[in-house]
Image (cartoon, rainbow, N blue to C red; front, side, top):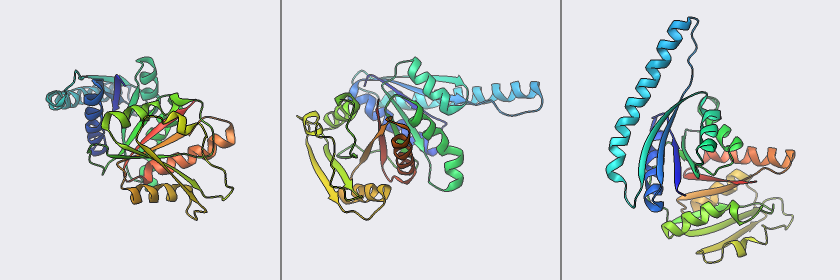
Amino acid sequence: MKKIMVATDYSESASNAVQYGVSLANHFGSELSLVSAVEEPYSAAAGALVDIKDHIREEAMETMGRVKEEVTPQLRNGATVDTHTVDGDPGPTITRVAKAKNYDLIVMGTKGSTAARELFTGSVANSVIKNSKLPVLAVPDEVVFHDFRRVLLSVDERKLAGVHVIQPLLDLVRAYDAELIIYHGDSDGDGKGYDPQLPTYLAGVNHRFEVRSGAKDDVSGGIQQAVRSHDADLLAMIYHDHGFFGRLFNESTVSRVVFDSAVALLVLQDH
């Protein structure tokens, strides 16, 4: 995890995301990049449009400069920080830049789950999770960073493409010397379990399994209950890109958990 992008708009949730990015960069000795996407404002007058866009860009650069000054003294273990301002719609722009610059992880803030907030801010996080091939760490605005002690990985019945899918999580668990709990909720009662290769993938990692059969909660509710009961500091889920209907269901579940989660959520990409 040598290159970490923190996508920021400098809201409260983005500020929290920066702290997660700093901690991860320190543990892995990473190159930490603060990236702000400047969306083109609407204006009927072309001249006014240019002026507004320039003003937004300058303001973003000044803010990033101040954040960089605050972050730099916190870095250790060879970690560095730089800043970038790019033009474009935040969701697609973050995805494009992360791919072009070969980042290993995207960190970004999310806000609450009211309909209005999900419409205006949730679409960015959803867009990045759905379209990026990189793991995404989504940080709710009310979550204040502290070291990861216990991590809950929620898995379903689908097989993974390989250990590379969860490798970023395994690296994180080892770096923080955290406990990993693998949670599988058999809510439909069909008796099917998780990928049988998981125990092999988890060799050498401090972990345990919890399979909850016959749960009456919906999928998102069951996951959140497991997070609370285990007092987890981080929730991890896997976004599967396998088949239209499977992807549609998985996308809906992940999107709901993103905005319901009371802890930071690491979305791993299965592709």
